[in-house]
Amino acid sequence: MFDTERELKETRINLCLDCGKCTVVCPVAQHDPEFNPRLIAQRRLSQSRNRPNDESIWSCINCYMCVERCNYHVKFPEFIQIVRAEAISEGVQPQCSHGGALQSLMHLMARKELKQDRLGWLPKDIELSEPCDTIFFVGCAPYFDIVFSDLGVNTLEGVKGALRLLNRAQVPFNILANERCCGRDLLLQGDREGFLTLASANMEEFARHGVKKIITNCPEGYYTLKIEYPRFLGSMDIEVTHLIEVIAPLLQSGELNVGSMKQKVTYHDPCTLGRCLRIFDQPRQIMGALQGLELVEMEQNREKSLCCGASPWVHCGAVNREIQEERLAQAEATGADILVTACPKCQIHLKCAQKRGDGRASQIEIQDLAYLAARSLD
Amino acid sequence: MNKTAPNIIIFTCNWDGLSSIEAASQAGYCYPSSVKMVRVSCLSRIHRGLIIKAFELGADGVMLLGCEPGNCHFETDAGLIEQEYENARSLLKLLGLREERLILAHIPQGDGYGFMTQLTCFITELEQMRPALPVRA
Figure 1 (tube, one colour):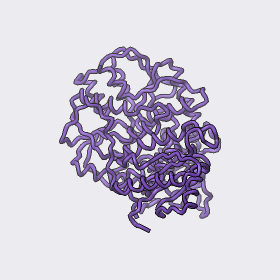
Figure 2: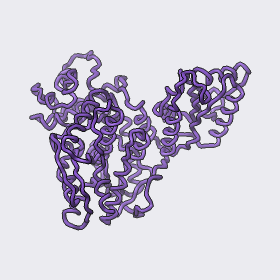
Figure 3: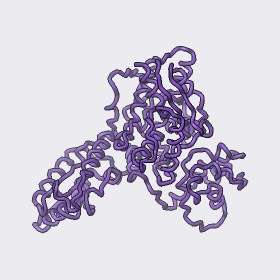
Figure 4: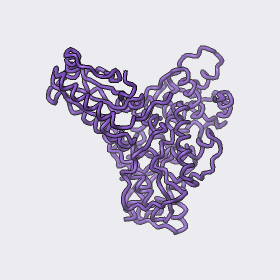
């Protein structure tokens, strides 16, 4: 079904010069000497028929730091996806974090008979436009808030903030009652079949409601709907945009005004939104529009931003925890009151280090960008 | 076997839970073969991932069968299963499956009749619901 050799060629992995720059910048390699992107590529590309099962392929966190540094822009994270898909087709089972709950939820969401009851959180003051060919894609936030309730995760606050901002900007939108997970994590962990089932179910749902435009607040969902869906399912006639791309220009032109907030914050660029989709300026423009807000940058920011240590819910371990603690220490060093991020998964992973770590991690407050901006509206 | 009998997974603890199932079989009670047991050393071993996995694999209902409060064999039952139970129920609700598909039963040691009463009620309840999310062939 998939032309592996063609896909491998598209990742430009055959251009790898063996220079090792990827390993130098890779946050996983810095904490785990066993992890070496260059050698993973070498092992896969060697023609030996009986390749041993390479455990280290599951440690990549898809942060795109290597792509940023590589002189030939070898797409190593996409290469890893292919290698993982191969491993899964050979019967290897990745070690699922959180007891496999998220994988099971994604597989259950792929079922045709699914009729979710997922809008119970929707506040009464949010105005939905019906019928409307623009939808807001909520993503997995309702599920995250339950699965990670013990971490004090509240990703729905970010979604509610996003909806309030859209209401204030008078952008009409509707929400689908039965949208599914975008499937990004299944794709990243190599479960292509699961991803395709979810993607097709979502596309059917979009077609049934005549969706022409999708706005989302989740970088992972944004990337998947905008880049991966057309890549796997062929071109689609739906415009996909991120909330930040909708709000930032309105703030710049003065069509939307947010309030003031006397606080010192630092911004954590999510890898998917930053290095992957090159959205660096707009989040800072939004924070710049908040009067009284002081934005201080961390030691590693923008293109060099350190990942939150996320993984597609597989093989999360001590190395991920060390990366998370390092990122939190960088945030603490800025002297900011709040660490602002624009990705629910960053929030989950950083809060996990705060709650479940050994107490070393900084306890800096973590908030979603949309929630922060919407808070100033009151 | 009745083809319409709901698929049920019972996660049972090795102590009072299992002893009540054994007492039921010794007393000659019968239940459908679509009821499957998974024996664990303590119900605290069970987490939301395993419960949701059972539904992913085609269960229509899941029963968590353990000792009565204060009677845990390991003495340190810290209410872990209650947290996981509540969490899994909330997830089932979001998925549009009814929360009643998951039950937590605390049974006294060797109470075969009590176990059968709970199970029969559960089967009847599940029969009145539409099937959960069936596994596609």
